[in-house]
Amino acid sequence: MRLFRNAHIAESGEKTSMIFYLSQSLISIAALWHYRDNRIRYLTMATVAYFMSYLATGEFDISLSLYFAFLVLGIGLSRNIEISSLLVVSWIVLYTIVGVVFQDLFATATALITRFGYIIIFLFMLLGKRTDELWKADVKDYRFLVRTGLITELAIVALVWMQNGIGSRVVAGNQPIGAGIVIGLAAVIGWCYLKKMFTGAETVVYCLISAVVTVLSGTRGYMVIIALPLAVVILAYLFNLPENGKNALIRIGVCCLIGAAAIICLFVVDRGETVIQVLRLDEGLGYRENENLFVKEIMRRAPWYNQLFGFGFGGNASKVNGFLEVVQQASWNREFMFSRLLTRTIFHNYWYTVLFKTGILGVGMIILFYGLMLRKIFCVKGQSWEKWMLGMMVTGNIVSLTFRITATCSIFEMLLVAFFIRQMQNGQIEIRERKNAKKEYHNMGHSEYSAEKKTNDSIRYYFGRADFVGDNENR
Image (cartoon, rainbow, N blue to C red):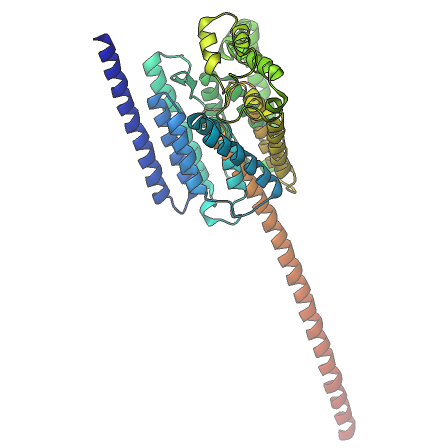
């Protein structure tokens, strides 16, 4: 009887989840149609639909797959081809084909979307048509993205607290969901402030809400991602760069007073206990240590070809000599950890996941990818603060991958990074075109002026001479 009841509950839960997945799909399709001429607003609605579906179901495998598919549909195929990007995409496609044909289909799809999908989204966005009118955005579009995202984040916090109690960690199932949107919005807020789209006061409000939501999420990796780009924005705000330092001294003075008061309250009166508790500094890595130990020992014992190429997107290490011994050793004789490591092929530490699935060459490909990304950012001329802000965003993402990948598996934030790289490139192209147009206009104007001056001088000479001759004859 109890077994029948549990089966009925499971079936009911699956039907409910399907309703939410269907709702996410319908909202995304409706947004794609309604905002067919404004991809930034479409991105906003698709992201909100994904997070609400994720929150409702407590799982992100299917909802993230839908989110990935709808974003690819909205971005479209790449219009430009670069050898380095083609190399990275070909590498992912090759591992996907091998995984689908010779390994496990579900494991391959999971690895592709959750661990390598952000690379595909980034490259599709970056290599799209540079002058695509659909991706043009103004201050209203950016404000819509930021405000909708922050409202969604606050709603998620409220819903989780209503269910789990005030002050509880913002998670869906066993996965962190809080601040999943905010870490991407940090780039939007910084960009709009540096481009004088957002006022200083508006930027401060957005940054404060983002910081609070990130702390409430309890996810240390998110704190790293958001802290680095916002540090650049805060410096720009303190020096009042958009207004050429007009109110810099006042802002620096006020922030120093607030900082001093915060230090006294948190570290002198409270002795840092609140900071340690909120940032979870007293906690270890948990079973990440078991996972790390497992991967290191497996890769040490694996044949050379697995060390070089990994076990594939859909493969596992069960055929490695001493596999059960490694699992036992890495689990520290804990039964729940032993069963987890037996089937585990995706780990909290992203770099160990890449090493396990694609080997040393795969780690090299990811390093190449991030190197190309940073090169794209810093090769753009001018816009120094914008470049540093995006560079810190990427650096924060790289560091956070040591702990865990984000709620969108880096898809949302990397799409925005690619979008703003395109914006910088377009800005550089526009500046170059204006300079060329100005130069051509100047040269054309000078040539026309010289020709006209030469013609007038000739007319004056001949007519003047005729008048002079005529005058002499009249005389």
